[in-house]
View (cartoon, rainbow, N blue to C red):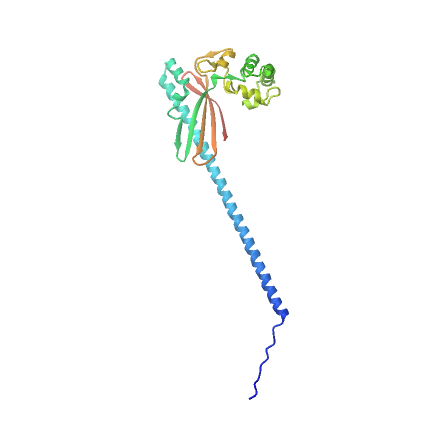
Length: 266
């Protein structure tokens, strides 16, 4: 019997290479698509995380500010309540005002939901008010701070700055402003900072002032604060941002009268 063989043409090398090349290109395209999609996913995730961080920070800032403001309200109310209770007893009122820790012991620190607040009261009348002090007083204070050689020139520069506009005092809003005046400088103000304030009214409380302050003070010496500064710091527990509010009040007999307000993030 004759055997019939069917001959199948062999696949050419060129066609095999073409198909292999096409598979390689397709694989590269798939890999590039995977890379691009991965990048898009990462960008979306990062954007979501950033938006979440911004939202969390805004919430923490709002909560910290609210807590600090509530701290000021609570402190002022507590101080006023004690002063009202003292009534016409001047000695009792002075004893309270000259002991800020005792005066605010019930509201020195408390929680508001997820936020916390701490409050202190500072007797700014225990310091020399840099805006009200004369050149002589400032020079003496700077000399006591260890800057004798520059004391007179610095005191003169400060008074010249404040009195630069006739009939209209250019009051300093912070000790940093004083240090920026030509002829004054940061080292001198830093050395005297514990004895200076921009929140006073020119009167000095000899009951609480440092001996350095009373030794250079001129004019009205009193036995209780005429100005007090409430400082409240609030924060959301677990978050690093802290908001600080500073409120200055004048003491007018048995009443506290608002003077000024400052606030900042720490």
